[in-house]
Picture (spheres, rainbow, N blue to C red):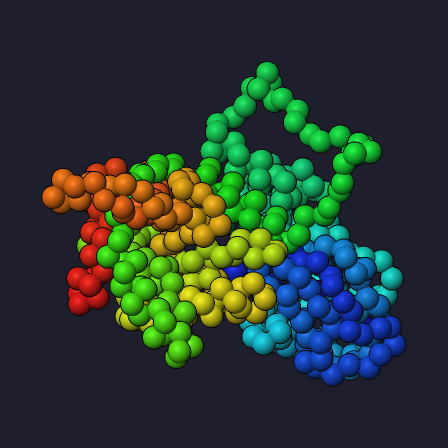
Length: 431
């Protein structure tokens, strides 16, 4: 019997992946759990295992090709009957990922999961002869997932695919119209890029992570009305404290960064301003106030920006935060993070000043409602409490917030609390 194994949904909204390497070839015998292919997704590089024991009859897709969740990966000749395999196909499988694992769901092995060998790749959509009830849109699980994430009622979307099937482009179009309103004919101005590439241009394919960054930025800006508050805080006391402890901690293998103090200050402030630590659920007309404090840290990597999450940051000391931040940054740059380390933040921090930049307007890591941007420390003249002009150290801060739920006054009070703690770090440590 021939079994079509499809690219499984490994969670976190991952809808596609690029084939990096095939581990098997036609005619090869494989065991259940053997790795079939290495896939690059927008978050991780994953080895996809076989859910069945058998002989590889066909492989779908070439190295470098991008395929969608639900597309065929391999055709495997197996033993057993239809009922037995269909029952087992719903089991979850472990996906090995270079030092970590996630759980994926095997596509239901009914309908076109058992097909004669054709040697052809398969389309993103399921069999076009599939019929759906009149009240239910015809669409793939991938399309339904995208619609759910964007808050679109898929049953109200007009499909342009075969038999009126709702495609991913249909959902994206519906989402754009929902955010900006229907466009008139005069407003539809073409901004397409010509296929012909000028001689003095270079073409490079977008990576999975870069496509995800682009989509997340658009989702955040379209969904959450951004507002940003800018401030400066004098941190000479913080600099002195760090200098006193830095060398001592370095002997213990601990790198004491300013980010550890900033995260600590943020978690203290969030406890006094729960609106900055919430989720806005417009579909159900409610606000979800998180009683835990998971802080996302934006990290620049060779592949693009990723945001690993420090869980329960409020329960960790400055030294514990410093150790975890350094560890996460190193593993992020080497693409060694676990999938679960990239989700469920409640607030985020981005330190663009580590490279260059005094002020910025950071984009919210949606569905968080706030993100703190940290600029480059400036050594500059300041007026002290005795009205004397002295050399000071100013740390620029930028707080972007979702103006649907966070008012400007609340954002300013939150930012002021952070400034107070950074200006007097000793007081923060005893809180």
